[in-house]
Image (cartoon, one colour):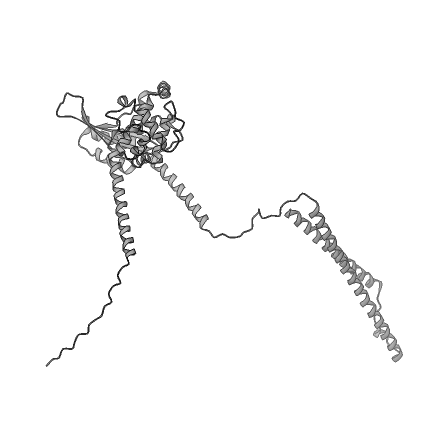
Amino acid sequence: MVKLRPRTAVVTEAPEPKLEEERICEDLMILSDDSDDNDSSSSDSAVKHLRGRWELASVLNFLNVFEPLVSEKLKLTAEEIEMGLIESNNTNAQLHIALLKGIPPVNKNIDDENAWITVLCKKLSPWWPWIATGEIPLTANKGKEISEYQGLNPINRLKFLKALCELRVQQDDVRSYIQENTKEEDLDSHFRKRKLGGDGKKTSYWFDGNDMQGYRLYREVNEISKKNAFSDKSCLSWEIEATNLDEFQRVARELSSSKTSPLAATGEMIETEAIPVVEKYHKKKERALKKKMKLEKVVNVNFSRPMRITRSCRNRMPATYTFDDYDKMISDAVEEREETDKDEVEGREQQSASLGSNESSEGNKKKLTEDEEPEINKEDEAPEITNDDEKENEKSKEDAESKGEYGVKNRLRQRVTRNSALC
């Protein structure tokens, strides 16, 4: 009979419940991620809607042609203008202020915060039927127009900007600018754009831009309404086909491989006329970006280094234009010289005293030897000191004295030069 051994129950620790604060933080993080995704998707859709409007291409072309009159200091790319219309930020305000300053009379308070919105509404209200279609989306209303403008969608803000450009063209300086440039060069080359090509029916391709805004390829589709073929009304759609080098090359390949000869010719025109200009622009942009990154890297490295106390040419003694320091330096040198002279004199006295004691001891020895040993051989007698030996001793003493004096002078000269260098 087989007995089954009872199974031991495994006790597992229950997970600790999360604190309420941790759960709230996680929920907030999830909500923030979702909101970021929603913001990015909404901005992308807003950019797509803006790029589908012909008014945006018209505004960019106006800023390209009349850049010297609008503002030479205002350097904005096409992407910055788009985001300014979407977010209604400072870039959008600077652009509108620059255009409004060219339409007299100029308001004195236009540079104040959000004051340009009121000026914009007052300028466009009487001219709206002649420069735009439909009803004006916003009018001056005792300051309420500022908050209402912030609540407009980007398309209506674009309509305001397009109407403002139309009103700016009506000014005298713009007309004189056009007349001066038409005398020097062809009108079509500067003020009128020529299309690159199309299918010859309803689709056209346009290339426009500059080194500041960037270059773009537009596709225009003009469809006549089927309800009334004899009317002038048409359905116009405007799309941006390419904004960078890769997109230009893709569109050129697609059109070049088309079976219809007009579209294939358009693809060749893009390859020969548009792509070289875009390549040059992107190379210039990459060089500027690399230079900026290199500069930021150098700045970050300098800030990341530890602070160390180093010697610097600026850590010098302050210059004084009085004789106090000089007199002190000379007095110190004189005292040092006197001390060295005293040391030399004492050394000489000690040396002479030692020589005198040696002579007296030798004389005593001679007397003792004479009493004890009256007969001494000449060979055993002590050598007499000759004149040559005396001259050599005197010469060695003089050399020692000259060396001591030279050392003192050399130290004095070094100290003077060092103090003059510090001053």
